[in-house]
Length: 304
Length: 292
Image (cartoon, rainbow over all chains, first blue to last red; front, top):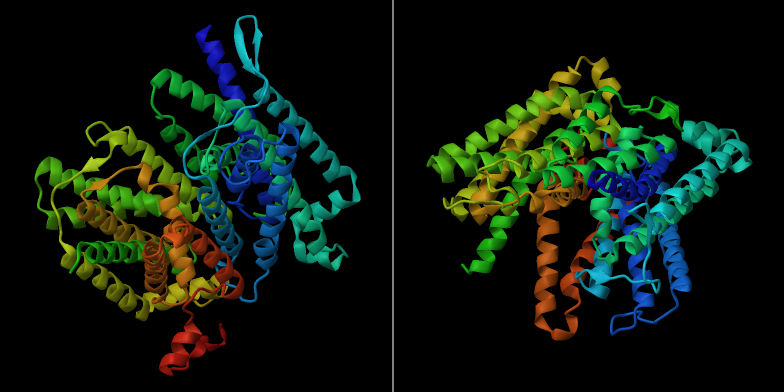
């Protein structure tokens, strides 16, 4: 009974991790770019929504209704993501070539991560803040088991969005352009794809996914802090690696798996001992089976 | 010398040592986002030796470096199989494993961290930092350094000219592990404390930023990066303490740091110090001059 509840809790956490893992895997599969601003976007949406909703003395405390507040949070994250695109990916095509060249966008994204987290800290302080929506109870009770509605919603939304993404990639003209860029940006430029105009779409999708995940996380666990994205992003990266870099369905499965392992390990062993087997396994996967646990079905196969 | 200044110099010296632990592999084209792993190995080895087994500090510090080097050598073979983003993630995963092991190691303090008593003193830490910089400068002037530079600039051409790619990269990674272990061993003793939480992902990120901001083209990059990014935030903190109206600078200095990182990548992606810059300053034109 207790165990089943823990499994449910694990899958619920996994539902949110899956969201973030999809955002990571998409940028890597499309652009070969490990985007470290995802935890920042996750946090920006949640903290901005919190600041706008809650009345108080902090900056931007407008006491807004939760619907517009969340919309503003997501919009802000998308705009931030577009700003990040301007200063990271666009400089990937550098003027000099050496072995550490591919790290430039990664490094800029780390710079942005530091900027956004400390901006939030300067504005709102480093203390955890309570994030509350007007609904009294967001938990569903099914046959004695507690199921968090936001997490369930998160999982359903993640699956829906990935399915929509898959359709976009496979069926539409812009999807074809994106897949071409994922295979080879230079060749797709020669074939008439306007890389500079298509790539921002990846960052819009990343912004939306990270922002929704951040807000769903805040709703489910009721707390926001400037550094709330860091631990989630680390676990989501683990989920992404399990699923194989660039594999969106793999990221969902991997995110669920990591959430499950994490919650079960903590409830059985008490401490965070799961770090050793999980990251040890990840190291082995990265080295010996880089396509992940579920085989190769990823965007941008030619890249790696 | 005031306590504040002494503390600042100690932080600076240790930052410089650890920056070279990332520089050595980075100079050979290997990005290490897991420097915290080697630092933790060195720190916990040396810390356990002095505090639990009563070993002298002067044996414990090299021992920490050696164990880190052995581990670096062992993991370098699997890690060298990976490239690009995969290597960044693999080194990151390695550091997480080390942190996880230490966190669950009975007798090493776990989440509460490890406290030690032995203290090396400022002069010793500064001397080691100077030795590391001098050693790296010497190493990069040898034939090995030339191979490393060749790999950094173009792997396939370096291989074509007969550079043993794997041996050079394994050596660079192992040396980096040794320097990181020594840095960690000094870190734990200089501050009498280390814990896994404080030496995690963020630690590795900052070290990598110091190095890439300083530039990996020359041996002077990491020391400049560590100097610049240790001193500028301190300076901002000092300015912030002068006037209460500047209070927001206190936490805002990290924003300045982040903006500096982004702008530097846009305006000067090779880092602060480049090969051409050194050559212009000292008027020693060489074959590498077309790189800027």
